[in-house]
Image 1 (cartoon, one colour):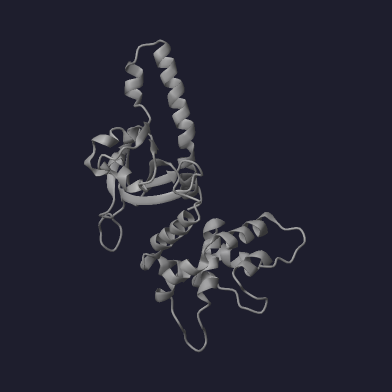
Image 2 (tube, helix red, strand yellow):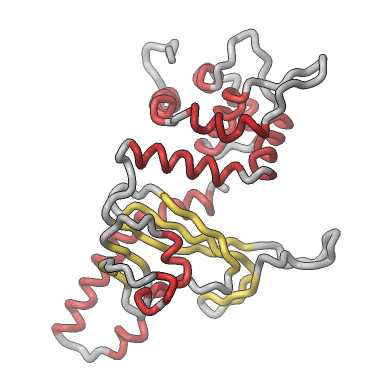
Length: 275
């Protein structure tokens, strides 16, 4: 892709680099069977590649549908979406409908899997370690809806002596580069440790997690694989240890574990702050 200006903005550089990284053909193949081939005489659907580019820009830049529509008037975004100067810009309704098409057909998970497969083939992921963690995603607890019921897939759970009605998003993150390679979503009442085996890609040699993942090896879900575990110690256990050199060394070790686990918090920051 050619970029017009001599001095490029950070957005221009970012989009030009992403265009080289993303394997567009694989993503288009996943969506194509569900995308409309033709519309009415007054309005034909935009090219699938254009709508996919717009959707990805919206996610990367954390923009609403109206804001994304306005951003397409900027030259870098327009060029990335393969829109010429004479081409009409997709409006917010078109952008929102494309997102709903992906959601209704469960295509987001398939796109995620296709990207991971491409990165694995390029040896850009599937390293020797995985960090696992979970975060609470709040759900509406009100019954003022058409069904007069709460979401049956959500459950109550406590955290820091506070009750929540929610679900949990569990992720597996590459310990070296911080890339999310696995995601599962479960009711909040499901224990973190039961999801660890689903978050591993089976090629790692080490697993890192917080105290909620204590006892991985004792769960039958983890099929007894020989993986070195670096799990945080429970606070109650640390408090019971008598003061002395051993307690100081243990505290330093736990700090090292926590520094490594910080990589797993970055995706949660995107989820909570942007989405």
